[in-house]
Image (cartoon, rainbow, N blue to C red; front, side, top):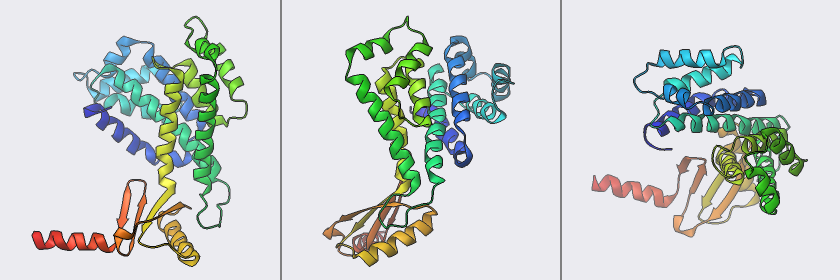
Length: 284
C-alpha cells in the first residue's frame, strides 16, 4: 500500500501502538468482524473512502454500522480509519485487516511476555519467543495445506461455508496457540480474493516485522568475549526496557567500535562511521 493510503495506514498503526501492550484477542476478532461487514458492501466501502465526505460524516456511518456490536475501543479504531484518506475503496479494508492482525500478533507477544525473562545472555526474551511460536504455527499450517491438493481445493471451494472451512483449518492446526487460530480462521473464512496460504504468509510477515523489535544485530570489528557480551546484553536490555536477543556479526572493516541495530533504529559508534562523519564535515 503506497501513496496517501500508505500514509493513512502508517498513521493508524502509530496510533495503535500505545494500545498494543494491553490489547486483547477479542479486539482483534471484533476488528476482523467489522472487516467482514465492510467487505460485504461495495457501497459502504465507497462511502467510507469518498474524499468529498467529511470525517464526521464517515464517523457517523461507522457509528451506525458497529454501535453496540463491538467495544468502544474497536469502534474508535474503525472511526479513525474511516476519517482518514484512501486512494481506493479496497484500501480501507486492507488497512483494517492489517490493524486487526497486528493486534492478534501483539497479543501473542504480550502473552508470552508475562513469563519471567531469561537471564542467560544472548537468549531471546519471552516476547520474541511468543512471536516465534506464532510464526511456527502459521508456517506449520501452510505446510499442511500445501502438502495436499485436496485440502487446497476444499479451501478454494466457493460453495463451502466459512464455518466448515474454519473447522477443517483448526483440525490441521490442533496445537496452535489461540492467536494463530484466530489468524488462521480469518484467512480461511475471509481470504479476500487471495489464496489462503498467501494471506497466512502476510500475517507471518507482520509477526516477523514485529519480532525485529526484540533482536539486536551487533556488528563489531573483532569477536566479543563472554564478559563483553554480558555487559552489552545488560546495557541494551536496560536501554530498550526489554530483553533482547543478540546476534553478533564480526566485520573487520569497521576498524573498531560497535554498530547496533534494533528494528529500524541504528546506533553506530564504529571508527569507520566517525571517519565518515569527519569527511562529511570537512567537505561541507
